[in-house]
Length: 359
Image (tube, rainbow, N blue to C red; front, side, top):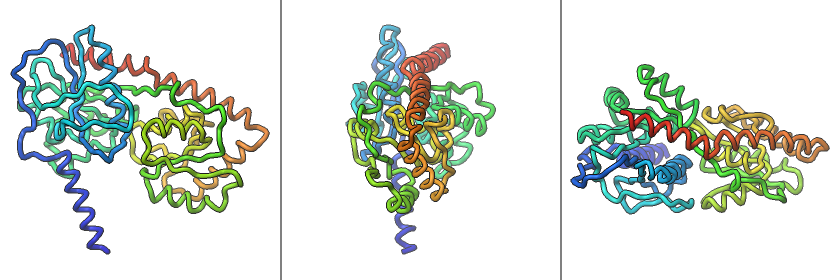
């Protein structure tokens, strides 16, 4: 059994290394075609199995930047190791870059924190400007599994700007690279509150995503199943496209969060906007929006307390004070919708573009 575990770990490690850190050659080439304006190119891995919220955020922000075309700004998504790849689990209308040829005059490349090494060095060697997008401050150290600390620091030192997705990610960057604090630019994502909204007929349904801390969610399910009141049920959100996720969240009353070391976890926001009481882990990054009574924090690993709080929440929904709870949750929903609105996202993206245009 031990040998199988070691073998599996080596396989996963090799896959991560091949996906993010291959350094056998420079993937990029200088473009011979002259361009005009500013083109923001977001590079991303090409993992068919991934349904990460971070990729959806970047797709949507690249798509949104197309609205700045009248200002001479365009944006593209580039999957440098698989030019034909595109996420299909959510709707989008992004412009894909289908080659690795870049212009040192007009292209500005945004690298996710997990791909900083070796991509930053590859781009710098060609004189391509780049920034780093830290969607998860706790993933910023991942490249250290395969590179030296100096290589990682060189990559960050060479970045013109460091984008962060949350207050927590900003704090992580300041802690790891205090001398680069002036490079930080906070970016907000937006969630469509007209899409993620409560169904008129809510069901006694508890939803969760088993791909996040699967052992924890399985333990909660195990201890909860014989204590659930009649008429209540658990439903895993797994293998669905965005439409399926929207439907389940709109009908459920409680969403269980199993976030761990995340920058600004998206599912709890979507769940809360869909009218769910959200129970569970903040993953640290969610603390900026974790507001009672909509959000109830459980310390990571406290499974018994987790189950107790679920049962308490069910009692609240079944009590005479349920109307007051719904009214308070609606107030939190309104503040959440404003915090992660299209306007907040627009302002943060414009601030980013203004900074790199002046560089």
